Length: 152
Image (cartoon, rainbow, N blue to C red):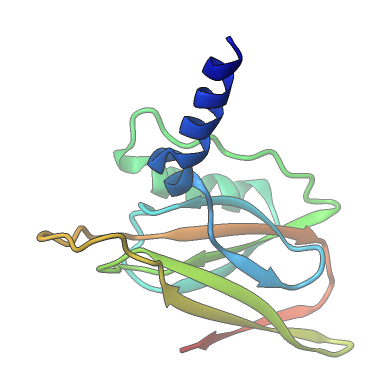
């Protein structure tokens, strides 16, 4: 019985599906939390967006869920205390990860850097799928302009 538990633990830790489901994004920005990430957003161009109300969040998820059955669940956010940062990478030929960094902050604005890099590959694929990744972060509500800078 003990060996069965040990074998199960080894299989769970080494399972490729477990590793693939982990989100490998990062941030160097206090109070920033990754709320949602997916590789298929139906958004063809790179864009960043601040979401400060439920209607805008609902509109984004209706775009994402156009071709999904069942669709992704819309998160419940208290917009009186929190706001969202949406980063859509547009069309990509490989899986990407991002790192968000607070570059500079003043009384009126926060400058945010977004670094995009390729996700590590395990083997080569003969057919490259197309990805349209998005990353949705939540943070405490601030009354400052947020400026985004793409770092390549």
